Length: 533
Image 1 (cartoon, rainbow, N blue to C red):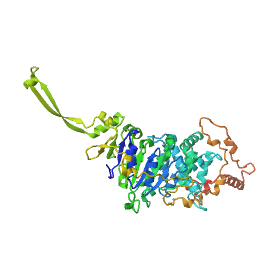
Image 2: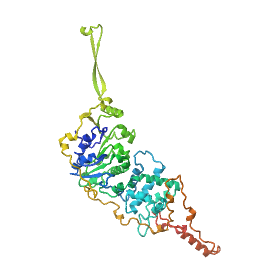
Image 3: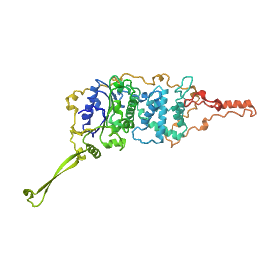
Image 4: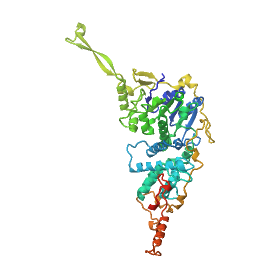
């Protein structure tokens, strides 16, 4: 039994119930479009990648394996009008790595602003445009956090050799933190660094250092792409933020505009095969986009163990089930899931006959018998019967059609599917071979001029040996006092108070000690010299 419509599919299948051999593998061995496969143990890669590599690029992304295909989330940021919203979407996932935040506290909100400014600064001013570089930039041991913020405000992001222009979002984020107290600033930095801890892993840093594939390759490439997101069970929790970030970027980018591709009619169909998708946490875009995702030639095949698993990630009142018109249910161990399935199956009319005997004990032989028949409604399957389904049976519910009680499919028992099980492509440390043609990103032209700094940065106040970068706001550290760095007052004792020329020389000395501010995309020529700026 196949389904070739645009509707999404949701399956309730407990562990070790045959969902892999009966649902996932047969689908991947028959789907000829692009696919994104959430493959926790790598079993689907080893079984289906051999056949799918015959007509599509098979990309394995494993954040713990150096043989994996590379993907740099920052290179998907589009320079120009879309850069701020693209970076903000990245920061949204970084701030909520588990997908469990309904509201953000003060530290998370401020860290979000810092991450947006830092990512934009890295994209415009650094040669290495990666999240690992964002982490090392904010925690540079050679300078304090305050010096890092001043560095961001003094960098020439948008100008040229003659005009100094700092990116307004970068300058605003840096100034916002400079205006805070030292303890609060340290708390914000500690929160931001805890969110970037994953990218300090050298393997993860290498995987996210460049792009072997781009999001547009999934639907606009010359041939389809099969992206396998393989995560070892021991690293699911640790690498979840990166997988969530990739899925978030793909979902948002491919559903922005219906006419975003000049070859809209030639776009590949995309299947999102997300096994154990509640384990990824709440993906807000995913819940809302299910309603219109089919219009972009994207179909979702979602698999969960129970209704409780979905409600834990998306809340009790979610729209996941509402937007999946095809539902498949195996025998479940959860009473709530069984009741939900039983209610969805509906009721059937059942005729019951009742026989009553009246009079003498010999009434049956004397024909003193009264038979009454009545029709009553009965659940098609009670919750108990749903939980007692045989191991080889499943329920299929399609909107607008009667429910189906079907036999489970095993791919190894079907000769057509068994013939398509081929050895998976071999991976090498020297580079990923089966990858699409390279696409340019919007930041290549900045590589040669990365790190442009204005001459005015040389006049920045001296560093305080990192004392501003303490990690524990409640434990103050003793450092140099502000008095040690105070600028000397102009020597007015040597001037005559009544001498106008002496007063002018003193004012000139005071103006010379005031550094020129370069922030918020303001040119140096815009400052009024009469105000001492």
